[in-house]
Image (cartoon, rainbow, N blue to C red; front, side):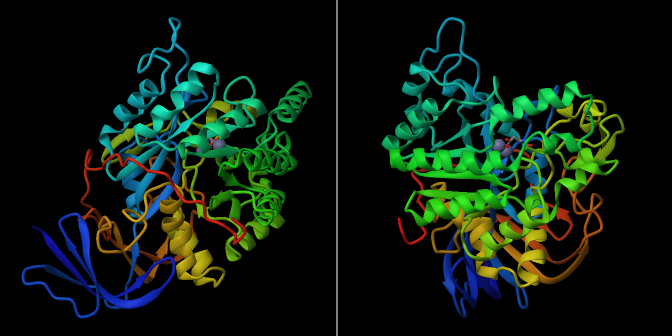
Length: 487
Ligand code: URP
Ligand code: ZN
Ligand code: ZN
C-alpha cells in the first residue's frame, strides 16, 4: 500500500496545535504522533509548515442554470479551483425538478431520485470529494412523502427559501412541515433568509421608476428582511424542535437574531461567506458594480464588522462561499486549460439590474483570504480558522470524523499550508473559470503548498495533479447541532 509520511509539521486542528507527523497509508491517515517512522514511506519534510484538514465548502453552485445562462464553473473546473485554495470537499445544491405531468412516481420524473440523478451525472467529472444538499422549492403531499428517500441517498439536508416569489420560495406552513419531517428523519433544514414579498414590491416600484443600475439590486432587498426571516424561521425550528442552519448570512441584524435564538436555546446555526466580511453595497455603484451582485447582497461596513465579531465570538459556525460565478463580460473568451471559453454573464443585465446573474466566484479564494484577513490580522485563531473552514461543516453535515479531522481513520485530505508564502492575488492566480476576481491585487500571506485528497497529491505549488472523475460522492449521515452551551 502506498505510504506517505509527513514529518515535522505543526498540526492545527479545530481544538489544538502541536508539533507532529502524519502517516498516510492508502487513502487514510493511519497514525498521528511524534517521531513516526515507516520502512518504505515517501517522506515529506513539513518543517515550518502547518498541517490542516482539507477545507470543506458547504455551499457551492456548479453548472447551475439560471438567469438564461449557467454558472461558469462546472464540477471539474470548480473542484480544481477549490483544491488550489485548500478545499477538498464541496457541497452543491441540487435543483428540485418540476413534477411530472403524469405524477411523481417513486424514483420517476419529479422525484428527488430523479433530481439527484441529474446532479450525479453533472458531477461525474468531479475532481475532489463532494456531497449534495437538496433545494426544497415546491412542497405537497407527494414531495413530503419522498423526503426520507434522500436520507437513503446520503443527502441529509434541505434548503428552503423565504424569497424568490413564484420560483423558489416556500410558504411558512411548508417550511414548518419540512422542519418537522427533517426532525423525524435526522435531517437539517438550511435557510435562505430574505423577505420575498417586500422584494417583489420594491423591485416592481424600482423598475416602474426606470431604475436599472446594479445598486438597485441591494436597494430592493432590504437587510431587515434577512433579520426578520431568520428569527421567524428560527422560531418555527424551535417549535418543531428541529435544527436549522442559516446560509450566507450578510447582516448585523441577522447575527443579532442568530445570537438571540442561540441564547434562547433554539437549535440554530449560521454560515457567512467571505464577500460579506469585506465588501459593501457601495461596490454596486461602481461602473463594474455587477461583479458584486449576489443574493443576498453585501451591506455596510457595520454589517462587515458585526459578522467578524460573530466569527471572533463563535456566534456563526461556518464560512462557506456560495460560489456561483459568472463572467463579467461573457462575450470575450478567456483561456481555460488552453481552450477559449466564454459564457454569458453579468452583461445580460446591462440595462436591467433584475437580469444580472446573481452570484460570485469564491471557492478558491475562501481559505487564503480568510487566513490573511482573519488569522494573520489576529481576528481569529488558527484553530477557529480550521473550525470555520472544515471541521464545523464536517460535524454539522454528517461527515465527521471521516472529513474535517486529522485522526487515525480519517480520509487523508490534508493541506500543507505555508504560513509565510506571499501571494499577490487576483484573476491571474485563480483557477476559477471566470474573467474577474473580487480580491484583485490583494496581498495575501499564507497559502496552500500541497493538497492531498484521500492520500493523492492533487496540488503541488502551482502544479495540478488531480484529474476529472477522481472525486467521490460522499454519503452523509445525521449531523451534529453545534451548540452555544444552551442546547
Ligand atoms: O447570488 C447567489 N447567491 N446565487 C446563488 C443562489 C443562492 O441563493 O444561494
Ligand atoms: Zn441562497
Ligand atoms: Zn447559494
